[in-house]
Image (spheres, rainbow, N blue to C red):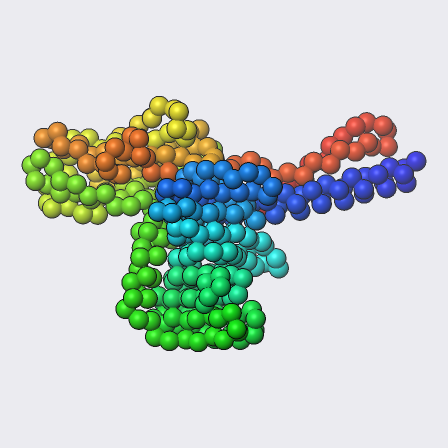
Length: 364
């Protein structure tokens, strides 16, 4: 009887581990950080859904954009891509042998990228014809479908492979590569028009990411008061975790007056936040220190999948500056928040005395 129980326990454990492996593959690897216009995404066999800010993406998810639309997608390690209009990409990622491998498959259209260089990480962009192996660089990839694939590189270097001929050429910053349906690959110095396309395709990706290595960054908002003072505000946040305090930093990165004059002119500095669009905003108040203020949102108010914020500075003359601007209340900045749910494997079994028990295995 004990032998039979052991067999049953092993079978249950095997099935549970299989389910755990499947679930692990379905963990989000990226987030739709900023959808603009007609942006949709699709998971598995489900129907297409309208994309919203902070929509998580699991391996195999597809994102497509309509005309006059684009989507900025941010990966967990802060690499950023911009899916241009009339484009379609499939997002993939997995961890194997300690290496985090990611792939963006460009079925059609264009994608701009800004990829972080990190150890034990691999990032590839692919099309039906080509594969670009990326390690810490920025550029633009155009899927040619029936014509040439085009890779315009702004910095770093990339190995660009044609899947028909298996020819691989190294592309450096300031160069453009062409991968052709007949298997030919060539590399040339980028023309002024190609550099213009690169800047146009990656501008929003760079702006959204900024220089913040640890998290997300809003666009800079600049406005002028009735008294002639000009201010620019930037809002930063690290990667949020559900149930943990989240520190939002608001920085005055542009000002027409000195720091001391600005501090003496500010009467109120407020951060407004909420976790759902149908909730009222809560507020936190801080004093301006040098040119920054840090607002700590309590963990009880931090929940997945996102938190929405906007900041307002009010001067003594009643003038107000906000980020974003205009209409910050109806157009807040959205930061992604990772789920705080424990990763557990629960295995029910019956012990030799006949009692039903559950073994709980926690994993990272």
